Length: 481
Image 1: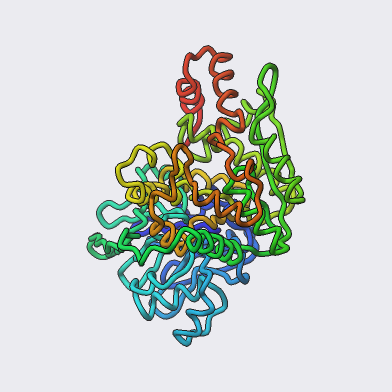
Image 2: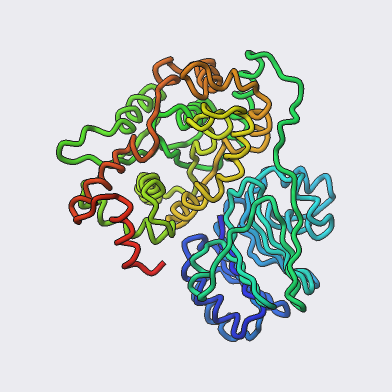
């Protein structure tokens, strides 16, 4: 992952960009760049970059900081009258380079060249996740992948536009950020301040001929394994709870010989029982014969990191904070181990019908689509900013577009069977060789399985509040978000 800040149509844009860049410094420390339109400056050292950049003057500035996963190629790119910055992982960039006869050094440069020559229609050919800002003469074109894995926020008024990877940058300038809708590509005109929107097609339920259940199971395992393979690079971590989602990812990594470490975190103190996620993480890690690192926080330790979590996710919701806490602790462990990337099982619930709302729905697959359209604002941003705060790229095999498209073609009767949700995924796990008790474990949501919800309840009472939300709001009021 990387960081993007674009400020257009504001006095002293360079200074504002440089000041704001400190807020997203953890998003990338492998390289720094800024363009004023006339001048593009890139540098590997933050000290040299800041010294040189402060000499520039402009009402427009596009900044990028690099977290390199595919070649250490500096951004923004600048060719003739076009400037481009992206936060992306394009898994088929080499195939696209061949198909379009491009000579590029990595996936970001390939995306730039494709948009430059083919326009936004090229986005439908991408296999990957991305957010980009394309400054082409008087137009600023910006957008993100259709699921919204990569974050992007904006503010516009009159002839002013601000675009950033994180909302807090725009807030720091006294503006109200809006999240870029993933199915929309925006074009802002610098001369007159007009904004146009191009709507993109999302997944539909117009599915191919349905396969038999056995063939569907085989396809799930094939597509998930390829989703893991295309995302695997070097040594990496897996956010691990011993649930079916993270276990399937870990199992496929084990079978393919990847260098992985599993991470699990929870709360336990006093009369609180051992966290269920830790119990199962240990059990499954032993079965898979994979290294597992765990951390159990006390009430005091939990209380100390809550302000950091709220400041990062910019939301005091008890659910979001409860889910974010184990992620935050796991990210700390992975960072200490020198990881640059972690995988998560996020997305499985949405495409294989793992929630009660799927069970209650009249049309399970339609509810899957509804959830996919909302996952960027509900889950993605929270997880992204936590991981990037620790310098970690987050990769999500269950949100691979080919796997999503296939999952939406699976008959609903295979997804929920009686009181068993994600039934066909559980059968696919057993086909891989997973034991029945692991495949069919009824896992609690992350905030409950990790006991962090209990920690929030105890902390609320300790601080004189009846409800978790009131306690978290009291912390938020003391923070500068």
